[in-house]
Image 1 (cartoon, protein in one colour):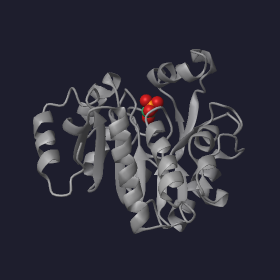
Image 2 (cartoon, rainbow, N blue to C red):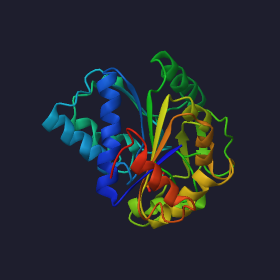
Image 3 (cartoon, protein in one colour):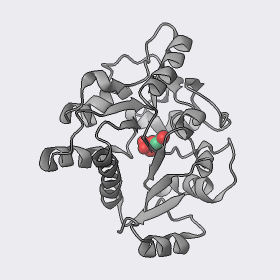
Image 4 (tube, protein in one colour):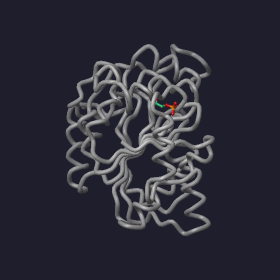
Length: 261
Ligand code: PGA
């Protein structure tokens, strides 16, 4: 894992966008795995800016989102379909038929999950997967205890996730869906390249467990230790519980080609 630490959220988001741009410049028809939540918003803003001002081209890009709430129609303002269109897709030149997001309203979830996995394979696999992390260490909606070999499926959300996400539902825990459809940890680990972003003190413990703890299904992000090409983008607060923080900074400052603050 490569750990890179930036002074603040904006700097972290810009550095992460640079990594996405490098992948797209090398492979204009790359397949991107996308995440929702507060954390990647700055990254998406920067990608939109790069599209507008620098001509970053998405015309051949295909995207697969990690997850969606079960029961929310695409038009619901808290659905991840809505989020992605508002925050990214409607501002860039991506072809609508190249956008894949798990369905929160299918009448056959099992068949849909199989189809989603198959579609990822048919498109050549995910070149770059963008991830956030939950305060409980989840990636996508792979809550503690999820199999590290899991595939796209329905998950029951943990209480902490429901409480964390209630802020998007007028602070009402009872309005947060209980189920989500999510790529599995096994699905995520098949991406060729992975970047995980974390910002703020509330993520510090999960980040430390992910990078420096044992590989365990109790912190599904820790499975990333098994992947050969993962970059962890952090701001100072999210990095604040890392034991080897001085070592990561030293590497960041000295490694040839390492992203600089
Ligand atoms: P957040 O969510 O970016 O809104 O903190 C991250 C997650 O739960 O995966």
